[in-house]
Length: 248
Image (cartoon, rainbow, N blue to C red; front, top):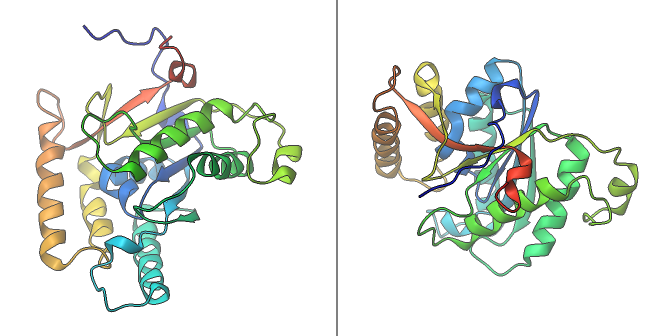
């Protein structure tokens, strides 16, 4: 038996500034570009935070790291323009490599205290069978950073940011790449924008790979709307921040 939190599901679409945290440069858009595009249409400010440098996934292995990084940024900015991303941050941790979890959490706290979002999007660290540590660490660090943002005794990576942080309310967190959604966002009207954004990610996908990605996401977007009144959707686990500790 699954026992849900007693707290109400916060309204993601009431958010005016959303920080979208991703392990790799395309995860936000693969999982939630439709949701993010709809938020942007409603006037929400969209900020992306990417944890890793993404170098391991670049398909052309003849490129130097600097050349690969340039292509990755090119893709990300092109996709962001389509979806409506206002600002991007990069932490630069080694893709699929060794790095310290607490350093990631400190950097996330710094960005959260800088930009003061009222909602967070992040991967579900508890996704069944998730084997990619970048996803697990990113999701868990995001959840902890949401809980600890107002506790400035828990330091970020920038003491000046901590000292000047006035505190603010984060209304909720929406977890993507989840098998336990409580919200299906209707993305029918923005599906083509999502596809156009995904097709920007050419550094890590060849044309066939992009076709297969779009096909898989199309099938998934239709699967999750079974019994609903719209054609395509994105599944999210939307939680009040207090639900992140002790299952209240």
